[in-house]
Image: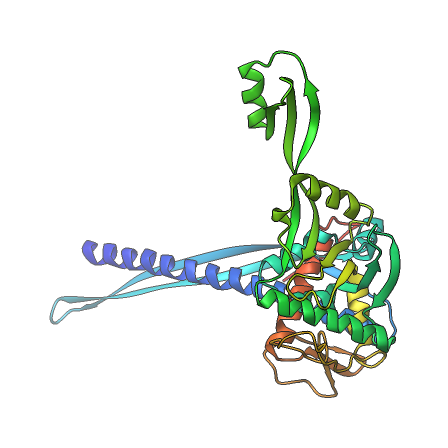
Length: 391
């Protein structure tokens, strides 16, 4: 009997151990999936609000605290048969799990948040997306308000708007974006930060100690001896982002420094653009800057594109080679009267359903929009008291 009881207890412990981890795994992955879908629906909801002429508003789930309980039971019963003198034992064991989640929901507002969604993205965000393999024309069509054409000294010449309400400028912008896509697909476009040596001390006439040289090296500083015997202190500096049809690293260090000084005249939300004659694609030259949008401007552009200012088809310039994709709409949002049967997130607003068009281009653009929103919002701090819901 003792042996049977021990076996029963062992099975109970084993059963409880088997129930706990799978339940925890399912719930953690489930909460993550729900949070991700909520973020997507909030973006869609605000696009719908723009379409309806309403102001945008965001809410976030700041925390999810869930308590998990695992319960195991064991029971032993006996029945004695007198004629045979045989004892019959009945064993019952079982395990169960339960959870009690608590959600904290925060309406996102306040001056800091407003500034973040109104401030245009900086050029390094553009560089990161293209460097990670994003199609440059897709990134431009979503992030760029237009292209500012500049004189050789960097002064303003004219602006090419990425706005269908201005058809001629919009067509020109689209052709520039497609030309850059063609160059990039053929590995003839460079999108990178300018790297150059910045001089901190031009001439130091005192004696240099080995300790000073080693300490400077650890800090990214470098001492070099000048022809006159003095020493120069320099460090490698990452400057502004440039989009070019030539390799900036083939320029001299001085030329990269001077180019960066020229680019610095532009705000941080401008990406320098220089397609020079004589290089790949140089028969379609352009010098200027890509002016980046803010989160709000991107949402307004997409929302207005549903009805208010829809995009239209634009053919590539005759000087541009074949491009892989050229969809009419940067991010197509389908609006229907009944709930769509799609695996993508959808949201109901004003009696209609909004969802992302189910194509590789639109799914990728929507994912990029979500990444940019998360980047812009950053860490959300509670303003006032959050709304807490316990299940």
